[in-house]
Image (cartoon, rainbow over all chains, first blue to last red):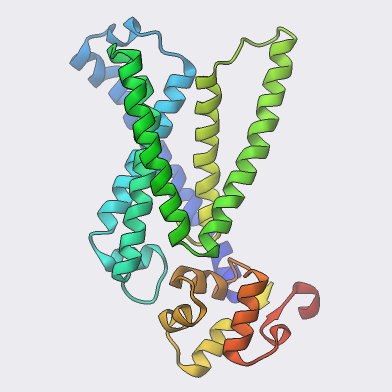
Length: 218
Length: 67
C-alpha cells in the first residue's frame, strides 16, 4: 500500500464522522423546521391539502441537495485558492479551472431545478401544457450544457461519470426488478414514472458523490 | 496499480500544471494519478511513458509485480 493510500485510509473515518455530524445536524434542523417553524408560517394543515407522495419528498430532497451543492461550489468558485484546495491542486485554481467548475455547478443546479419544477407546478396548480413546455425548454438547455461539460473535460471526469452511471444502472435495475416482481405478484403498489425517476435521480446523486470522492474530485 | 509519476515529476522539477499541459489533461487528473486514485487509459499511459522517455513498466507497476 502506498503512503498516500494509507493517509487516505486514515482520513476516511474522520470524513465519515464529519458527514455523519452534518447529516445529524441537518436532520435535527429539518425536524425542528417541519414540526415547529413551518406550521407557524403556513398554517398547521397547509401541507395536508396537497396529495404529497413519498416520491415527491424524495425528488424534493434530491433537488434541494443538488441546488445547495451547486450553490456551495459557485460560492467556492469566488475564491480560486479555495477551489484549488477543494480539488487538491498545487496552488490556486486557474481561470479555466474556475470556469469549468462554474459550468459543472450550473449544470448540477439546473438538474435540481428541473427535478423540482414538476413538483412545484403540480402543487401550485400551474397549467400542465405551459409547465411542461417550460420544463422541456429547460431540459434542452440542460442537455446542451451537459454535452459542453462532457466535451470540455478529460478522461478522469468522463470515466467517473461513466462509473456513476453504470453503478446507478445496475442498482436501479435491480431495485426496479424487485419492485416490478412484487408489483406483478400484487405484493406492492404500482409505481408511476415519477416514482421511478425520483428513485433513479436520488441513486445517481448518492453514487456520483461516492464515485467523485473515490477519485479525489469531491 | 502503483506509479512513479510524482517522483519522475519531482526529478524534473515540473509543476502539476506543466505536466498536465504536456499530457493534455487537467491538474486534477495529474493529482489523481499521483495519489493512486486513478489508473490512466492505455493511450494516456503511453503518452506519460513518451514524455518521461521511459518504458511504461518502469513507471507503472501492478500489485503482483511489487509483491
